[in-house]
Length: 61
Image (tube, rainbow, N blue to C red; front, side):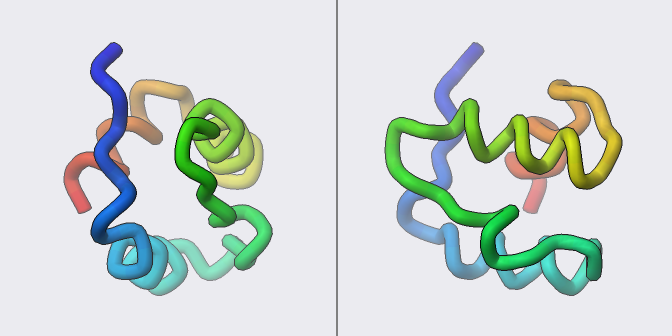
């Protein structure tokens, strides 16, 4: 898997995710460089979606 490129525009992506999925909290969207796996896991659990769906969603925002 190619590493997700979230660093530079994470605040923008985070805002779009919160608008689209009102169930997400700031804790769900906590992003630390190098801990993409944890972020994806939290989103999978909260949104009840598969890993590929989450990765695609993040790349398309």
